[in-house]
Amino acid sequence: MHAGMDRKNVLMILSLVFVLASALSLLILLDRGPEKPVENVNTGKRYASIQEAIDANDTLNGHTLLVHPGKYVECVNITKTLIVKGLNRSSTIIERSRRGPAAVTVRADGSTLANFTVRNSTIGIRCFAANRCEILGNDLFGCGTSIAAYFSNNTLVEGNEV
Image (tube, rainbow, N blue to C red; front, side):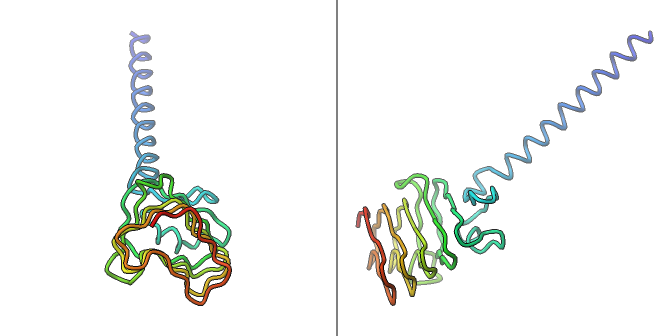
């Protein structure tokens, strides 16, 4: 009889361990799942939108943000020196929200925007008072002005399809 009680306890403990491991796995998936598709490579933190990742206190000048495929309806305002890179040029899409004229505005010197499809905006990508910014390998569709640089010097625009 004593052996039967030990077997019950072992089974109960194993069941509890299984439930806790399952719950932990679910929490990890929720933190890294598709609802947080923007990753700061330097911190490992993930965000629900490109702008949220840029604005985060943990995102510092020199960091790289990787943006997973999906449609991002927002006006992205790059205000820190960052590399913002889409993981799949054709399926990582930025569409302008109604808040501003440009889908993406680069305002920080030395920033890079690469590997996105930018569409349906008055201005697709604009560098505004940002020097040495790089606009690399993007597709721009349905934009009144595809790429514009205002009060910016040494802007590199290369490998974009407009």
